[in-house]
Image 1 (cartoon, rainbow, N blue to C red):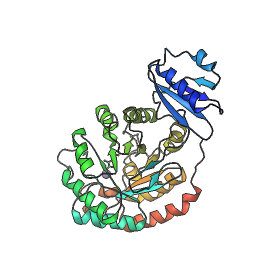
Image 2: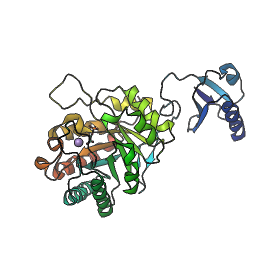
Image 3: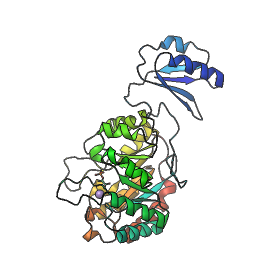
Image 4: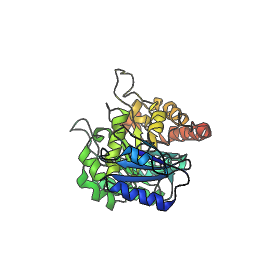
Amino acid sequence: MIILLKKNASQAQIANLTDRLKEFGVQTNLSVGSAHTIIGLVGDTSRVDIDMLSALEIVDSVQRVQDPFKKANRRFHEEDTVIELSNGIKIGGGNFQMIAGPCSVESERQIIEIAKAVKDAGATILRGGAFKPRTSPYAFQGLGAEGLRLLQLAKKETGLPIITELMDASHIHLFEDADVDIIQVGARNMQNFELLKKLGKTNKPILLKRGLANTLSELLTSAEYIMAGGNEKVMLCERGIRTFETRTRNTLDLSAIPVLHRLTHLPVVIDPSHATGEARLVPPMALAAVAGGADGLIIEVHNDPSRALCDGAQSLTPEVFAKTAERIRAILPFAWRERT
Ligand code: PEP
Ligand code: MN
């Protein structure tokens, strides 16, 4: 349920109303936007008397929100969420960031070389998997804790914040020790609700990837799990979904960008690498995502793609990434920013 307040509502009146609402056993969420001040109610609102609320002097209108996602809902929070990383860079609300790096951290030399190259090309965040979710148990599983150490080293060398995937909540302390800036929840764990609940208790920004066969409503409801626990720094990532098409690894759902921007205030990141599975398809899809209003891109880059231990076929060389980044910068001023 959302309560739209009149413009002249005083702070004391708002505090008074919030106290009364808490008596109904619901959680309140105050959002002060440029157009409206909204009190969002989360929890069992069946006991809340809409007629009583509507009659109050400071209340403009009261609306029920049917969607299962509340804190993630644009109706609860009109302004875009802007997530700031520890080095001050921001993502969301018109702030665009480019995340790049290898699928997996393979060695010190590999990650440092790629980190320097993507930084030179304009990437602002370094990616690299340490714990890898592989389809086959016999495939390279990542370097684990050693991979986190190497990422931290690359961060020290370049100053780039780091993002890496968490698969097991018992590893959260390792991610904290390694000073990971953004925790990635991979497509396969989008509905690992126990993991999401635990991430709700951390204060690190989370990149939540859409599952291979999940709807946007399910993605938002998974984001709600993290937010319900108290961590509101969530970014959503479209990385391609399974369809009947076999010419690409997955099908990139670009319309997810304007649809998510309509439904939620959370930043939207596009992964054209896992979406297409083929390096040649990544630059055009990256440009399309930027034109469509993505708040960020996450792109796989490898210094020797043919020898990569994971996802070489979809990895750009640093040279191609640099050219792509240049074109991204050129079209960024024309990106779609209006709500549709
Ligand atoms: C990855 O980012 O390397 C990855 C495994 O992604 P996804 O979860 O989208 O498959
Ligand atoms: Mn990958």
